[in-house]
Length: 353
Image 1 (cartoon, one colour):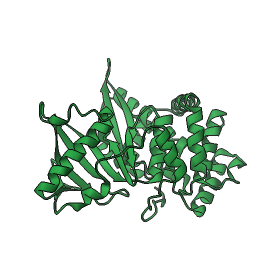
Image 2: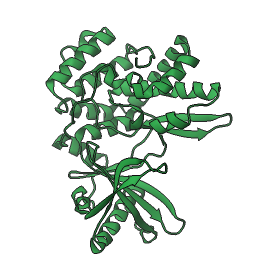
Image 3: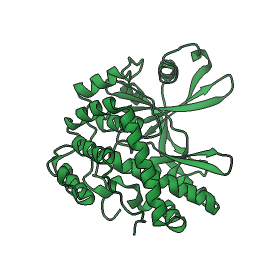
Image 4: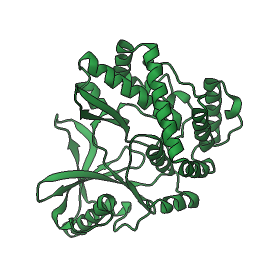
């Protein structure tokens, strides 16, 4: 990405009192029967291999038998809170089949594989360390995107649902060689995804940080790109970091757009998505303003990064209103204000060189 790489290791930010009150108001705060730290007490682990026998960089972890019985019951209760508002009727049919641990993510997540013994159907969810950046990212996803993300918070523990879809890197490896009609649809969705990320300043959307949801339609398939990593919500100081089009990992899709779309069509899709984002913002304006007000007072990045990004955004939009802003929340709010006033400018679609 032209030398712009994320900081060596992003430090998670704590959830302050204002954000905690916001989460409580919107029913994200619950009393969990298990905390993140409880899952750290595993006594053995093995690498989790893919179907192609490649290391996934996840490790399957194991617990002493008596301790796992308690963890199994607690995680099934967590799943019922996440999926059924705590309804315990289905708990007798649920079991935890596997617990995987990721050591390289900022929030060092545990991925829980839960199975219904009546039909062997399985689902996943995640137990993570909390990070205010991620919470802001999840909330902005719910308010400004066509997607909804279910999550729960208890102290320093974050519970997230699993988003179904093909990981972006796998999709580019094995699903991108479609006919011209399908390629155009894929390119169109990437343009819309690029737009959504830039408006709300969600960074680091390279291929392995989003999934592709494919829905069969009357003619062909419909595609939707969904972010799954929100740790880099409004943290880094480079404008290009918030534009998925500038990550070389995404070049296979970028090239589809270059091969199948002209400049007028790209602009049309950008305007369509900006209109939809504006409609979503207006429909939840009070909640959005409350969230951004909290975010504006929350130091979720460094002063140096804020000042660098505000300068790049002012230059990009040809708008000096960014230059006096002092927080990432200010920058996101100003970006959205430009969108609502129809003064938002977008980049040309181009691949990483």
